[in-house]
Length: 136
Image 1 (cartoon, rainbow, N blue to C red):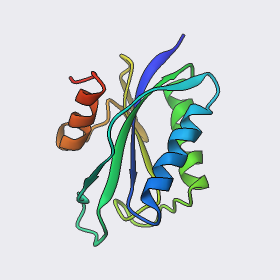
Image 2: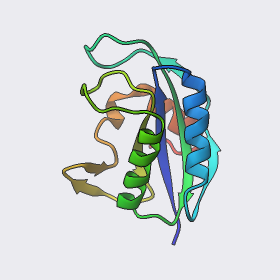
Image 3: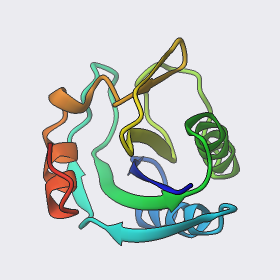
Image 4: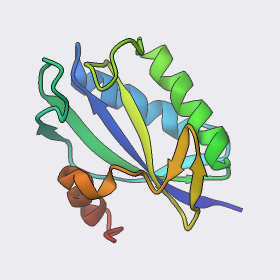
């Protein structure tokens, strides 16, 4: 069975546009998955107190046969391949991939919460979901 997962892409280090493009290609190449829609790319200010540059953000709708856990593991691999290093919480990063929503699934695990708990606080995610026709 396939579900539609909404994945938030963000980058604020290096060639931000190239990191987003690489992430879209990597998502489309996941087994049993295809990107069915992409929002516009927008620049946003960071939400943390850690000094860093602005982010480029985008949301994609991914039709996938992967489970939420399998998808999370795949997102972590894609981030690592893009040079993501997890040293400072909410610090700058080459690539950040978040599962914002995953079909009608609700998940509450220590390292995976769906819908994403920050969704109500991130207006750009709400705009991007609306652009994809997936507003709450």
